[in-house]
Image (tube, rainbow, N blue to C red; front, side):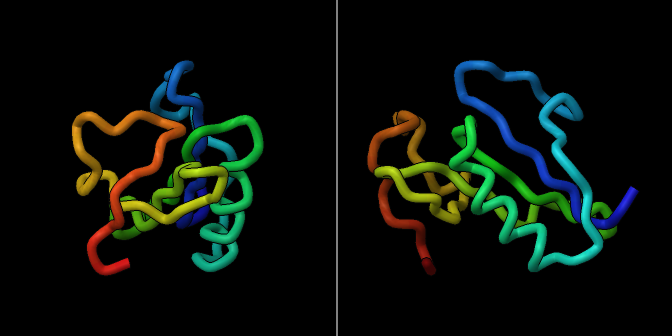
Length: 91
């Protein structure tokens, strides 16, 4: 398994875990670039996991038709996919 792991999924078809796994990469920038593009292809979100650091390093969502890097923890509990989200602090 390579260091960077790419996951994607739909909000209304949760599979979870490795069922959402798409591919693994050795290059962080390439993985993040693919995650940003992939979120537009039959998915509502994509995430990049760094297996060495054991943490998510990038999260993308479709917001107003655009692929946006988001901090999931900053979204309100009432956030609904497909609707505009508030600005992410520090973005």
